[in-house]
Image (tube, rainbow, N blue to C red; front, side):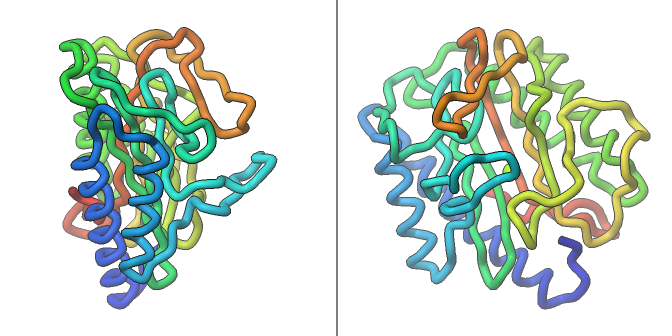
Length: 255
Ligand code: MG
C-alpha cells in the first residue's frame, strides 16, 4: 500500500497502535506453563474486542496448500516463523524463546509486527541473539529514508546480525503491507547498499530480520507453515510496520 492521504495515514497509525497493544499484552503473558493456544486465543479476543479482524486467520499465502488456521504465529526455539499455535499445542518452558508474529486489519488497513520473547531466564548467548536481531531491525529502519534503496535496508540488517556472529535466513524477509498481508516488494535481510527499488514517500513496509544462532538453512514442516532451522539451532524474529515519510521512517507498530 502507498499512503496517499491523511485519513489513510491516521488509520494506519491507529492500526499500528492497536497491534502494538496486543503484542504487549501477549509479551506480558509469556511465562513457563502457558500454552501456545492460550496466547492465540488471547490475541484473537483482544483484536475482536477492539472491533478489528485478525488478518492471518484464513489467509492463504502464495504457494500454501491451505488457509492459515490461527490468529497468531508462535515459533518456539528452533522454529523460525509461522508456528501454528492451535494445532500441535505446546507449553512454554523456562529458558525457551518464543516468536510472536501478528497482523490485524483496522478500517481496511493491514499491519504486521513480531517480537521474540524470552521465557523466564535464557542463556547469555540466547540473550545476545535476541538483542542483535532487534538491533538489526532498528538499523534497517534507520535506512528507510527517502531516496535510499531497498538494498540499504537489507544490508544494514545483515551487517548487524553477522557482526554479532549470527546468520540471516535467506528464504524469508520483509514485504510491502497495508492492503494485503504480503505485497511487493520482497525485502531480503541481506543485500548490497544502493541496490533494489528506490524508497518513496508513503510506502508502507514490514521489515523483519530473521536470524539463527547456527547455520542459516531452514526447512518447512509437513504442516505447510512451520519453518525450522535445519540444524536445530535457535532462531529469532523481530518485525515492525513502517511508513516512509519526508522526515524519515514512522514506526507505526512501536511497542
Ligand atoms: Mg511480515
